Length: 135
Length: 385
Ligand SMILES: [Zn+2]
Image 1 (cartoon, rainbow over the protein chains, first blue to last red):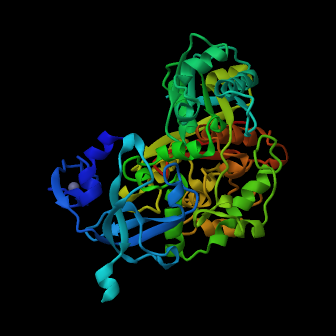
Image 2: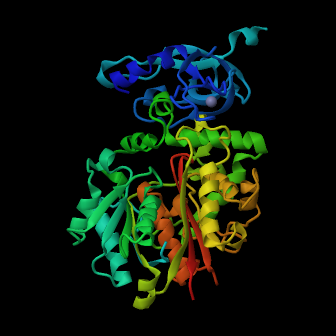
Image 3: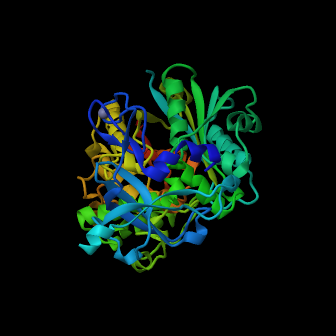
């Protein structure tokens, strides 16, 4: 990711900032200017709480460039509490402990080894939900 | 719209063509297709390709291939829809001829994967996904499809080994196709023990990437009849889109673009899924083949794998797929695969499929997918006797 691409999306990467559609009230992440559900303009900011459950997951053994030294790692589709799915890595868990339906919460982590233009990329990953694990 | 036929086909073997350039591969397929058609100079050329910029540092393929194929001066374009680029080129050529912009057009698909390192190829293939919100999280293209497969297994209760028939059938059919890259049959045992790439997807769930080019000459039905060529009609042609990112879909396990484009193409041809004699589907991964079968109406939701387990996708089954090896075992030169599918369907309909020939087939479907279900193009081909 280049510096402009990162800078432009930093609120999404660091704070899970998305949008809520003023017409159909769908919560959107990542944000987009037209609601995909009702095609109305959607520009109202909405901050997601960062909790969700694992919708699906995969253990990546053969990693793309920039992620070789992180492999193996777990990627997932996370169903956020407010509705939408997002794609992220899971962290602080053993791959064999991951299951569909596992409660997870967002944390901020470094995303990859070395990156373009000297940028140190931070962003969201998800870990098993602490509160619920203790409860 | 005018009646449209395919009057010539050409292909190179799918392989690691270290000694042949991107451009020369395309030229070989285009020249072979023109020779087969008995045509010297088409009016238009559409070149389907995904990775030429990333791996060969080359764009402007329309003019480049036209020039090197001895067609300098004709109208020519590169067409891109990720892994479905070849099928998009076929659809562009179809629209050009059907709409009356020209009488004869060539659609060519070409991919030169070995000009980059395997890591570069993996990174370039990930560009079919959402760059900002999928690839940045370390998802390879395989991993995105693995997310679909894991969820599919969870929802419908399949085990990984249940997907074996897709790969075993593809390799079986490729074993007698001289243009295929992987000509060795595989056993169930080998499938079960294959090494994981992105769990649950293993090496033997995945199509092998390679270099290759295929081309078809598309002309008006009237010209085809006049030339006395064996006539294969394009009875239906349609494309449809879905979100690029899988996470933007309400139902990730339903390929809505496959459903829409296949229904439109079938309706145009005036037939239903039950009338189709064989299908060349986008079996880039075994899960992709299953989801395509379901979206096209060949199997109910959750039953695509059951169809394969029941033996219905083999050459003796109710709906043979990957009849010359498919993406899985003929090989998947990504931007070329959509044209290989059409070339192979024409081979079947003309009775030129050698020992892979399906007896008496009349209607074939080809379907190619750009991304993980994002851009899907379907063609219905019909033999006219
Ligand atoms: Zn809305």
